Structures are given as C-alpha cells and as structure tokens.
Image (cartoon, rainbow, N blue to C red; front, top):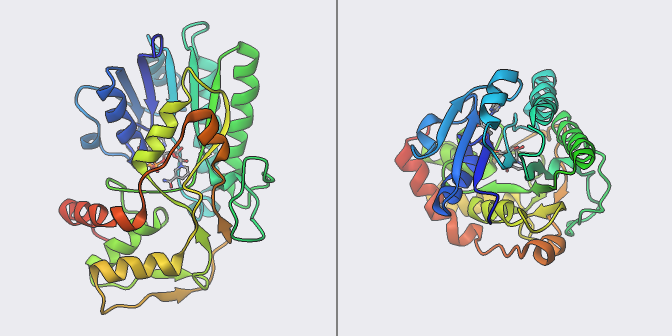
Length: 311
Ligand SMILES: NC(=O)c1ccc[n+]([C@@H]2O[C@H](COP(=O)([O-])OP(=O)(O)OC[C@H]3O[C@@H](n4cnc5c(N)ncnc54)[C@H](O)[C@@H]3O)[C@@H](O)[C@H]2O)c1
C-alpha cells in the first residue's frame, strides 16, 4: 500500500482502534493515535505508535495529529446505543462535531484515503432475522445511530468535494479480547465479567433479539482492506445471527453453569434483528471473516480473567 504508510488512528487506544494500530504497525506503517482516553487505555497503545492524548473536537490536537499523515482511520466515538439517550448531547458532539472538526482540518492534498468507522446503529429495525445489506433503510432509532449516520453523510459530502477517497465500514457487534467493561457496550464482555463475579447475565427484553457477533480481528482486517482498493459503504459482520439467550447460555456454560440469565424490560434504541449482509464487503474488500463466538469465546474469558476486569 504505497502512499498509505503514515496512518492516523483516532480512537486508537480503544478496543478496536488499538488492535488496528497493532495490525498497521505489523505491516510497517507509521502510526499516530489521537485519543482522549475517555474509554481507551494508554497501555493498549503499542509504544511504537505516537500517542497524542487529545480530543477530536480540539482544533490544535487534530492539527498536530494530522501533520505528515496520508491515511486516516477515524474510530474515535462515544460508543453506546443505550447510553446515547441520556448523553445525547455529548454523543452527538463527539460523533458528529468531532468528525466535522477532523474533516475541516484535513490538510489539502496530503491525505490520500479516509476510512470512517460506522455502525449497524444507522439502520432501521429489520422485520425478520435475515441479514440486511447496505440498501436497508437508514432510519436510526437511537441518538448514537443518528450521529453515526450524520458523520457518514457529512464525510461523504465534504471528502467527495475534495476528491479524497472514502471507505465507510459499518461494524456489527464486535467481540474479542481487550474491550473495556461498561454497563452499556459489548454483551459478551458484560456477560463474562458478571459471571466471573458470580452474577447472572442480565438480558433486556425476551432475549430473542439477534445480533451479529464478529471478532475484532476480522473487523480490523475489513477496516484495512478498503484502503487503496474500494470506496463506498460496507457492512462488516459475519452474516450469522445469535440471540442474546444463545449468547448468555454459551457464556454461562463456559464460566458458571450454576447461574441462569435474569430478564429486565427492553431498553429503547435496541434493534430486534441486527444481522449483517456482507456480500458487498466480500466482493469489494475480499472480506472473509474467519472467527466465531464458539471458537473464540475462551480467549475472551481468559483475557478478562487475566485483566481482572470488574463489573
Ligand atoms: N464495539 C462495537 O461493537 C462497535 C459496533 C459498531 C461500531 N463501532 C464503532 O467502532 C469504533 C471503535 O469502537 P470501540 O468498540 O473500539 O469503542 P472504544 O470506546 O473502545 O473506542 C473508542 C475510542 O475513542 C476514544 N474517544 C472517545 N471520545 C473521544 C474524543 N472526543 N476524542 C478523542 N478520542 C475519543 C475513546 O477513549 C476510545 O479509546 C467507534 O467509532 C464505534 O462507533 C463499534
């Protein structure tokens, strides 16, 4: 990937961003990270990367981060569908205005490719547990989804005008080692963390809602695959749905078989069915997810245990 060797990863201290940084370094890229460490951890960033602790909404931090960069991976965001109802201002400010700030500071001519991390949260609910492709209606049902869609749209317009190629990757539910524990994001991390503490997983609703759980390493591969190769919008998932009941039982069987899930009222903003159609990503990006919950859950349990994450 000649010409795309000096990468900026915003949100590069986070769950997905830090894995992306490691993968880019392994391919010989120079990597700068811009992260305000609100959710990310300094220790997650490889020392070989240049870490700027700063906010994507801060003009000076962004200007500094963009110097000598030819490829941007924009992942920094407030990442919580449920939490975005209470914190809608902060969520939109970071996810929309943070993106706008980055776009307005792009040095003209220097940045040759822009990758925007978006989300299945941009979609309207699906009527059945069938994979949805990129033509599925984008009528988000949470402030988080609204912000991610606005970021997509403003990036498409502004970068289109400037002639900077843009790849938008819509991640589905990403799992894997290294995810910070919050009560809101990452059902598998939350379930395992609670089970390790002897607490039952809590399911909101009847547990028959489906998600597409995709491994962080597959997400990283799909995120890098578009650069120099394909502009456009791509779902990154597995194409396979798993209900939250199935997920809870998988985690219970591995960690604490004496426990059973408990149920609470469904929360606003939750899609009933969220399964990715990935034909476009397969064809244009060569995306071929190879990991699965069943095969990789033990790695996640071991990492959470070792990190001593508490609920
Ligand atoms: N995890 C998922 O299942 C999932 C699903 C869909 C989309 N995404 C998207 O993937 C991207 C990465 O998410 P993640 O799961 O790694 O979450 P994360 O919270 O671990 O990472 C986000 C990072 O952004 C940083 N950040 C937040 N606000 C910032 C700001 N104002 N300035 C600078 N840095 C800031 C955080 O400190 C954190 O390190 C996000 O854009 C998210 O919307 C994630």
